[in-house]
Length: 343
Image (cartoon, rainbow, N blue to C red; front, side):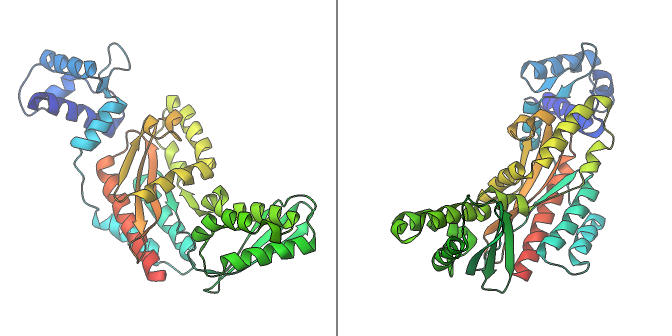
């Protein structure tokens, strides 16, 4: 791009992100650093449209950035600001208010982040990584059972699930003993990789009913359900603020997506695979492509410098990326310190 083309492109994108409206050539003549005619600017905008970076919602309207244009802008032209003192104090205060466990504190931080950004905040909380001491199955009814986990740090967690039919008190006790033996001293993350192998190796030692119970009970902890429990979503109502009538269908679609927390948690889990803030725009994010939304997300680490969760903000594609990127980055660092201090 020439300097003029780059400036026209940047002004169009910044104008769109600020107002949500198409940007016309006449308005640009008043803001460009060099004096050029509206006709010249229109020619530049047509070239950018030909390149697929700008689009026109109506024949007589101005231009708006395409998804490719937004991607080029955030990758090469985005000017990221600093977190303001007020925003920093709001986030810091939310992490220090009251007591509660880590999940409760992260809930407050997520609420503060959604309030500051006027978007919906997503927080993927850390997995419980203490070694397991004991596992037990408790029958509540023929269709409902409870898995109880006792951790070496004294915490106890449980989860309801539907057991295979025909379970007896004996098979439940056998399944609990079997899992306790192979899980003792391992974390939940480690347990997932050894359960299937242990069943194959010791198939003759465990009753058929107990084996079915082990398989279904383990899945309730180490499969997708555990991800669902780890996700905190706050500030969905913010997505309605300033939405025009044409946006309501997209907002409803996004609300439906946000209700499917399992899929979002799986997606945020991808952020655990690499450091730094990542921006997903529109169809780049398969989970939110129908709603035309953007997600700004960053992983956070524990005291061992291992990625254990993620923080993000979701909103329309015309997010104020320059402000939200540093906010998400700061919140991820804040949450990482919080998790490290409490671990």
